[in-house]
Image (cartoon, rainbow, N blue to C red; front, side, top):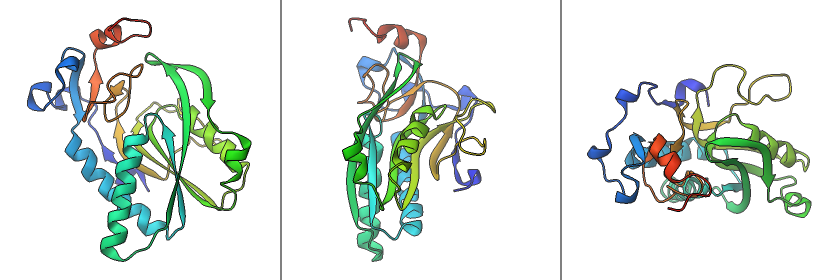
Length: 230
């Protein structure tokens, strides 16, 4: 998928949606600055990603959910793929796997990627078509670490769908063989370099229950910081 087909979110915060315009849980109202992507737009964009994936993957396809943040995107994407299969006659046999990955505390990366993937688990991917589903690509360190591990087991194909890709300055993104910056095959939205939450993206396990994707403010970071009593 070329970058021209990504949905590009404006970098100017004045173009975001004020909280008062959409429904936001009261317990988060003082912790967010703006809505970046409303829930309805997320769902529509996922429908288009599903069309692209079905068109390029006749199957069978193993869809790998990266937990915890990716599970809602995974669920909605798989549901959209299944609807297309039923309405268009395109048969894409699906199976599911789940991997937990963690590298953030508060709004900063720890620099260490922890994966819940044993060699026995990874062996099941050998010779199969894999679609990894992830919530957000920031520097890409977590995702490239996972992909390097999966490639050791020689899948037939290995592609990635991310809901969000942060627009970072050149040199900040993880690189792949040959020195090029890593870019996934499927991208929902290209977003500015802000810490976003909602639609299962969290800040220390909070905000996963927010339907929209929003920008957390400084008060929210302090209120829900690691070790704070909310």
